[in-house]
Length: 579
Ligand code: F6R
Image 1 (tube, rainbow, N blue to C red):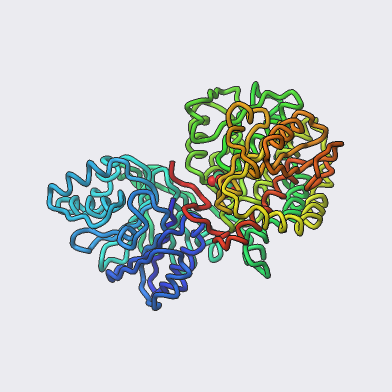
Image 2 (cartoon, rainbow, N blue to C red; image 1 turned 90 degrees about the horizontal axis):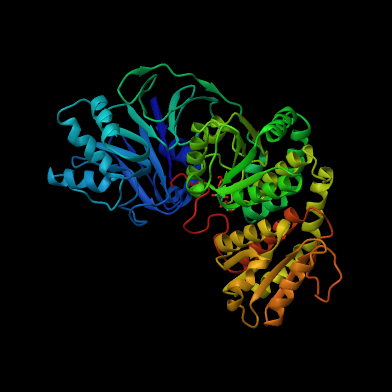
């Protein structure tokens, strides 16, 4: 994953207040370590988050520097493995987002030629490769041979000591040039500079560019000069970006859900209405609808399939990383990609693949101008606002609300208008009870969540939340599957959360079956006559959304009790831009 930022100017820029301030806006892409290099040859790196790094280092100035926030792929989380990397002569400095797949082969050849490697990363090969090529070529030719000889994915920035210039190269990892009033930016996405300029040029695969303080030139992989369009975007910076009076972004974002869903519904009734009507038309006129997504967005897509199937629409979904292995698409397929970030590599790859096969591409994204939005024929924005906590909360809910709205346009019966108030009510009504439940559950090693139909996707989403934020092993599963193996794991006291929407007697029986084996059954249910103590009652049809919100709160309060790093859980990143 990783985020990269470079800035170049005639005047001096501040490392802390300009470069690292921009880099901090990309920290959602990874926060294992951070580093920067200047054209004076100064390099500083550190393991951990950017805020700690800012406390550690003294500010300095330069006219040109590159920086990197890392999500480790190859090589442990250490200072030496942090970017930037350099060549043997400490003359070329590089930052890289992506994976150089044939790095072992290239590294072996370079070592044979006398290069000395000091890290365990794939990325270090870049600076040594360029150093070797520069012995007989200029930088443009060295970059051309890099593009032709490497396999893998990359957004790379290169600087040379003493030269006020940045080289930028892109394949399959996002890269954009930001055109500011007095400076040029290179970054993984526009968010790095969207607070200071709205002009950008997106790199396409195989392109590279040479950036100087007031000029930039783009080339294709063969070195042919390209004319590129400047893209002007709108980006408002809502108040939601600050944590306000909340202790964590996660709880703030959970509490924002009534407002976020209302904003989305207003936009679907208003400025996005034509767009969603067009998508509904496409759904009606396609032979079948195929969703793809990853993580929480995939669970939202499962609900989309449930809603559409209920009204007779042939809809399927598949996890993006397996899409090409298990799904077929053709020109009669409507392909719908769901992605909060709009950058998830597996979703981007599946979308490209579907596009090549002639499918119509629709997407649901939260981040405007993202790669997936730009690849789509029609892209709906879910208007959840910036989500800072790594865990998806309000964006999951808004994805589901968008899918409910689409299904409602096609005949699914639901009262959209009551959603924001119901969410508000469920949070207010249950938060204290959930805190008590967290006190009971926080030391458990395993939690099982069972659901059926409408409540199956929520069971998966709740389990994902519990794993990633409260570090409890959790399994969300179909109630009917339980007795085909997993029930062997139920011991006296094992917590099982049963999601029982409506009068679902099969779910009720599944809950009874585990109770009979000593499980501590917690029910989240629509009212039904039963001899269970109903722990949490959701007396409403928007069960899928509301049950997940209960799960979000439970996760949050368990993680708080365990004093975990809630907004930035270990090993994760918000935008997963590697396969
Ligand atoms: C879970 C979570 C992840 C994302 C997944 C897809 O809380 O945040 O599982 O849902 O990485 O990300 P997007 O939606 O950006 O494609």
